[in-house]
Image (tube, rainbow, N blue to C red):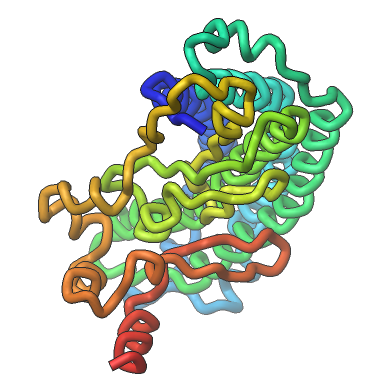
Length: 358
């Protein structure tokens, strides 16, 4: 393999493209939730005003009174219907983006592989055009599978958000001497509980879309198996990236294995790695070394404030003193109902490992 400057440029372009599609879907989800809240906010304002009027001695009405309050129950009923609609719409929003995303993933994979050939091969676009393509059935299966997962994970959203809003309403607020301020604060808290469902919906959508993109890339790699030796984990090496992804960057994995198995909403990508130029049929062309950035070397060059932003002070101290190694920074964890994923190793676990080794 020869990861070239062009390969890295293509990798950056791929990140921009996939993030653009994910961001567009996220904006549609945010707009849908904002519209739904606007449609029920007036009813919630009226319900809160009624409850504040029913308060005595500056205390919020009891749980029993809240449960009997007609406007409050009406607000909850409207909210329940809105949340059900939003949870049903989420798989539709995601599914609309998936066919293009999986097709894009296959296209980028071909170009990334083509960029690793020697110049004598005729250029990236020419080489990429000669590769076998991922089958349409394989890409359609990814869309169907991902849509099904979003549907099943989105189903509990409405109930979770409704329970959070109801709990907020029952918990109440100290009315005090300024009922208008109390009402505004209470409405803000209820809206916050409502938007907790939106935030969970965004996590589901973004995570599943990114995983579908990686699955599309994997399908294309299988179609090019004769010219590939595996794939490499590629993280965005900036101060927004977690210690786990910094640690996993550059690791190489066998052809046909899924990944990167990063955390929810993770931005990491997979880079197909071609066989050596000799194995590709160019035995007399000198192959240069890979230009894939070394994560440790890049991290060491970061300003101290950026290093702390990535690692946190305690984790950075363990790393600097040699009590923690680079590979210790990532831990594979199991999550029921989802795939296994790598996440930052907790500082407490790193300290325990360091203590056991001393």
